[in-house]
Length: 289
Length: 266
Image (cartoon, rainbow over all chains, first blue to last red; front, top):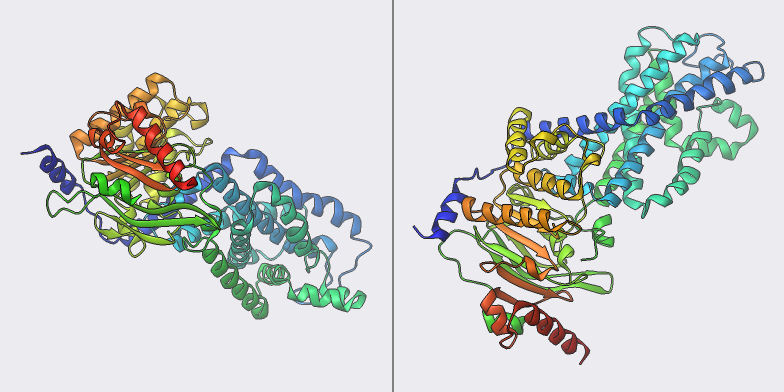
């Protein structure tokens, strides 16, 4: 047998892949989730800062403002609540907002460092790979949000016990929407250094122009245009979705807006990473050779 | 490009009905107004060790990016074992292993976790991936370092791990983009020997991109790429003939790339 024929026979013995089975898709998801979890565990500073940020707002800011800002009875609350209790859902959503942006930062870092190529050369569809990245980031974010809610419980912010269960789908949906926004931004950010722009033009405006820190009826009393801005901000609806769910209630308008924003941001993110027109096609893969 | 190809017959006829491991036809790509690749054609059969030789900026990494579908080419076609990459990327990429020029390992994770992550992206079961990871690490002499963080490895060791990860899924076509850059002579020799052995013993088709002429072995097929075009392609003797009877590959490479430069400036 000639060397060429022998080689071809050996090649033919390799398993020729057909379409990848459903299990392969799940294994891919498992692998990506595992990697995100391991990276999170290795970066202890990231975990601490993710917790310290909302706790500073709760312990210092909210305690300071509890006697200045009164929150009247408005759904989902059935009685007057202290300011600390009011801000907790917004701060839980803030954890998800920062986690979404952290995922975005990590995508840009992976692209610059080259490790994103391993992800993008997987035989599974790119939209699925992005979905896996999104889900992995959200799971880490939801875990952080629960740790924050646990600490808030010790700070005597105690929603009904059932709320800790009913808030899970709300946290997932809000996390997916904010993670999809992060993915979309990562497809648009040219360099890691540009991330400061995202801080100033996305994270801070989204957080402050929302109902996270003050109820919207108060905003409306002060400024009508700001109230419109808050209403147009998907983060406001993410906060309200979480707030209602934490008290065992469902807010359909907030859910619809968050779902719509998720589909919009997710769809645009998939286009952003599309091999035909995405970020790498426009700028090259980073290497000059 | 076509002049060089016509002289030496760059696109070889297939030895039998088996599809080529890699077949590229009329491939072109540009970044904005700047062309990166123009009308590239090449064919690699199973068991071939093909060296893609070109200076920095020749378009080697762009060619790798297109063959691995980091992004789509603006013109031409790429087939991997007969599967059109643009139309059926999953089937094509499943048979591909790749080592990029830039390290793609996660420095915070262990060697084993990096391999298992790569396997998971190909949908491999974790138990099987662990078994294969142990096998591949043993083959490259890195079994002892499986639990160490990649951050603690030398450049040569990282390259070995990247090759182990690329081979974990048992690819039939292996692409390596400047795999020996920054490595000492011992590590370079080890990598080249390991990949050549895989070609010979396992029928793996290899495309090895480099700008280092000493990495071209006697039996390798050579594709000379310069300024986004293929200048010449074939066996070593064919390249020497294509360069007007150059005495060695170094001289042939200088003549071919110089000829191209003069041609483009004329």
